[in-house]
Length: 394
Image 1 (cartoon, rainbow, N blue to C red):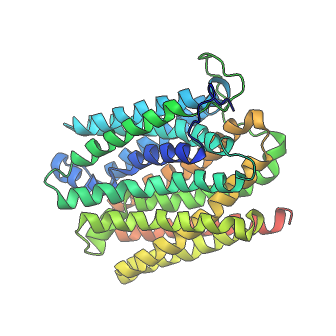
Image 2: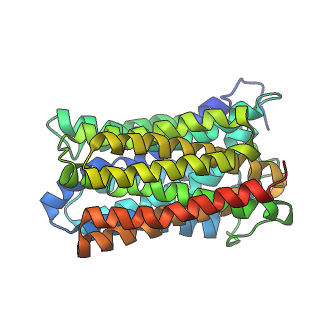
């Protein structure tokens, strides 16, 4: 880390705040999709396609530039992410049809792809002696907390102000501007950054030191992100059409609850220990998915919220444990790239199952689609937890 001429510069909490602002922008449209459906006119499948464009963009950036911040430095990559986040908000403000929504989601996905590896690594590397555990929690909490605050903010503004489709994005533009200013002041943590080298796509490259923990960790992340994808893409539709919840602020709060529970789950990981937390989180995730299925059968909003809280806490517990194990096993020179490879698998869980839900909802309806989704993800989460409990060293 370079102190920058003796000035006291922001530390890891500031980097975590930048991370949170960037991630909040990626879920900002979640409660608004119903309004866009009414205004533009498109199916439930198209809602999940718009969402999947975001996840595919994340994966593409992680594959092509996942290790780029290891070369050019964390700060330039974070500034590029802020610029893309601002451009995404601009697309939604100029929205005049489906095409701009898709472009906006694509830019948002590119921003998230840059942030996932670079911001996580920056937060961890800006931690001082004895701060590593707190910094690890700050990184994962900023990720999940930011994702949760997006729908909460837009749901409140959409429900209680006269500008439901514009004010959320103006507010986010202001936050992004502030975050870019903070990023400019952050110390650079890469020892010898290169000046804009050509990207060297690494694909999903995992150093040999990490392979033992990568499979159970990434499978748990895939299952956990599938739950998050369900809530961020189609939970508002489930709430309004199946459970009769019409208030956008309430829909945003339901989505927020799963990310709040995720952050709470992450706070327990260090106390339990990462190697125990991974299978425990998968177990809680299974219970949460069962509650989501029960909410659809019983048409109960209360069960949906309980499923969000239980599943979200399990996702958070497993997610932080996985990131801790992978980040600890990865050599410093490959840390950003290794974390990015982990996020490729996680974001595949965000995209693939949710598009399946959209297709099934078009053919069979939302309730059967949700039940099929849970019946597919439950065995995956249970398998990841069982593998982790048996194969990871104690």
